Amino acid sequence: MAKPNAFIFDLNGTMINDMPFHLKAWFRTLNEELQAGLSLEEVRSHMYGKNEELLDRVFGKGHFTKAQADAISLEKEKRYQQEFRPHLELIAGLPAFLEKAEKNKILMAIGSAAIPFNIDYILDNLSIRHYFKTIVSADDVAVSKPHPEVFLKAAAQLGAAPESCLVFEDAPKGVEAALNAGMNCVVVTTMHAKEEFRNYPNIVSYIADYTDPSLDELFT
Image (cartoon, rainbow, N blue to C red; front, side):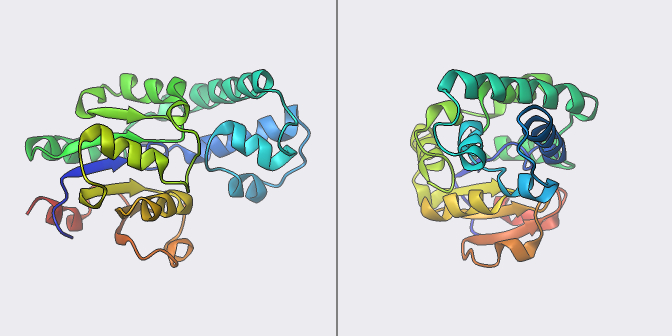
């Protein structure tokens, strides 16, 4: 891996291993409250992009008003936060990795489909906000991943050329967004197996966590 000038991190499943808790919260919200009748795997297949886009995929566009979708989204996130709070920690090796990146003067940003309510919950409870020059959330983009807007906006705000940015992602749609942005990607295999990423040529490495020795190449 060539040394990049900037790192752009997805958040959920990439910096914290919380996707099973999001899956559980969505499963309960969609089935117990909204009577969607979906299997766990069907819910999992819809878990990308903005919350309102997930609701559109499941129920059809326009089924909920913007106010209704926002209320459903907020309640789902409150449920997720309550259940995940006892387990809130960075993925193994990430604290040292962020510190090393900062010492090497690598610019860092977050490009996530999460709403600010969730991003703030993670960054502030784990005291890592200071590492990131910019944060691009669901509220900051018109179109979610796999559209490249989130990563291109993060790169622009960092003042970095897209080709000099390295994205850290855990989901195929996120890797596709990085590809569409002209960026290489490190995949963190918290939620998806390697086989699910086989069609993406921009992947430079697969890691289980940030203790992986292949990451040392980013600083040499």
